[in-house]
Image 1 (spheres, rainbow, N blue to C red):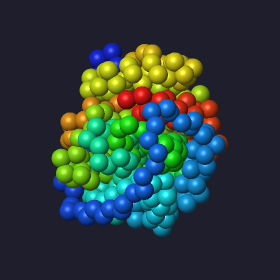
Image 2 (cartoon, rainbow, N blue to C red):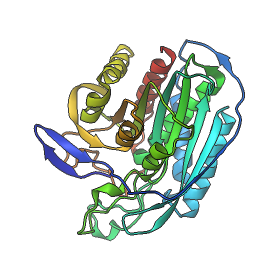
Image 3 (spheres, rainbow, N blue to C red):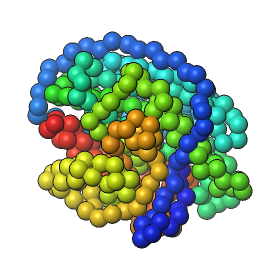
Length: 331
């Protein structure tokens, strides 16, 4: 998902890219139930979020076109429906870096769909088909669990969805699970193509689940479950949505999560939020684990066989999930 490139005094972390023109897709929808509305943020249950992460990993690597990918997509759609969301399913064949057609699904769960004031929460649910940063050359072409890189963000959003289904906020909330984010050009291919990542979010930006979709702002969760994770202020987030970054980081500090949400700049990351910003004009931020002490800027297990449940920490999930809930319920 990432290449590290100098950018002035920052680091440019190429987390994903564009795919060219996706093929025609289809969208289906289901209807929701109506929960009680409240402005008080509910309690984010870290054990619940941890279980949602583990449930995804249990399917195996969620690589597009695989059995595990299909089974996990069905599971996520069922959970959003169970939690009272109006469900939209986008299906499309998206072209990978090597010409492979990926059978992709974006899943969108909408709460308070009738309200015009909306917030978008999103994460990618597929996992990397290659362990191309693994120190063992024998592992480079093996798919990985993606416990942190993919499943953690989705796990947090599933717990948020569960809470939204019980206590509706005073705004509309859309939860977008993006597919085919992590199928970009691997490190072992000489002809690197930067525009081959984030295929699902690119498709959604061009074909939103609701015509002319708009939101007040968006929050992307990417690698939000690691032990000792640190979330710096990402450059593109600051450029697009500095007031949202300030609001989220301030809320985190108020809640006592300042050791996770670092009040410092961390670099520029091209990730799913870039296509929401450029494609839909929605100011969006990226909450993503950034480690300034590693060569890649990410955790040592990133894009290796060690991205598994051993790294997932309930305290980190709680810090992110409770912060996002407080932001939503205080709009």
